[in-house]
Image 1 (cartoon, rainbow, N blue to C red):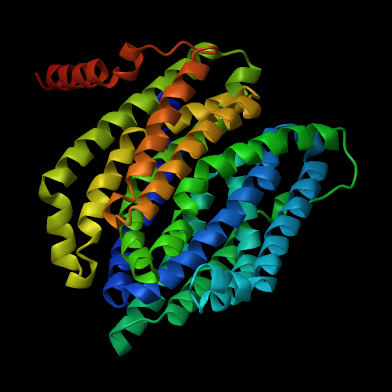
Image 2 (cartoon, rainbow, N blue to C red):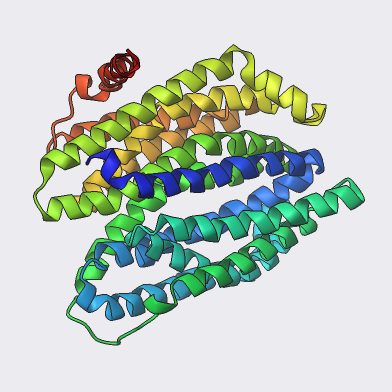
Length: 435
């Protein structure tokens, strides 16, 4: 894949991810204005919301990409995907609302039932937004994705700054209302951008069995892989307390910068990999995969070194009150995860090769070791060691994904290190043109 041939799509994708980075500044304002306990409650809400939509994205919406390439059958694929999406998201939210009180007792947080009451509303208004975003990725309409997320973050930014300016503090409920407003207006814009794609047929050539056979292992793989990043706050809540959840949530939010880079890469690589495999263009697939893996890996290593040499401490002490200083060691240790994070690109490649079952097995092994590590950290009551299970998870995952991907495209160590000669050649070419 030649970068210059896709520069417009990459540029819009980068611009979209810069929105996440920009909103990170607003997130710092929110943390400044909230008690850790209040932010901990919001963390419990937003992570379970994300978890539900991760499940639905994998089982329902991923079919829009996997089978939506069959343009003649899109009406039927749209119908199946939207039906599954509505059932999974609303069904899960209603189930949690029903069991809100016993879960509050189990996790020792009386206000958890309040969290689940807000969950059902956020779920409802988030459904059209998430459906539309998958269409954008399928058709690589990254400019429309950028517009939708601009409204999402723009509304929340305006609401946050207005409330903080007037009151100088935020509560859990106020932050939830801010997210509701951003999600609602973003969903409206998203629907307007896919109005021509909103057609449905009750029958099609694509077999429901084919969709189910793909969706089940893919969903299990995605659910297992993202469990450490979404459900960790509930394990922390069980072993520790809501205040620790709030402080750790700050470290997680800072870490999102790493995650969004890889998310952007996966959003572009998976649809491209599906097309390249269909065309048997394995040279382009190899080139695209190794470039993305190597470039992101070296960027992450540079940032990790900078953070652990004092950048994290400088940033947090400049912009946040003392009640959040515990996030410094959390984030420094958590940043090590970014070394393994780029290798998740190989998981997208395996899925494109229609190998969701093998991917699921790899992630299951990694998740089991992660869970054991987390239980040990909880039993010995050492909250500062919370990021260690994540490091273990991504180390095992990276190794196993690399070994499995090599059965399809052979990626050697020098291919992973290709950033060095590529960067060197870029510098040489720059100076040649300057002469």
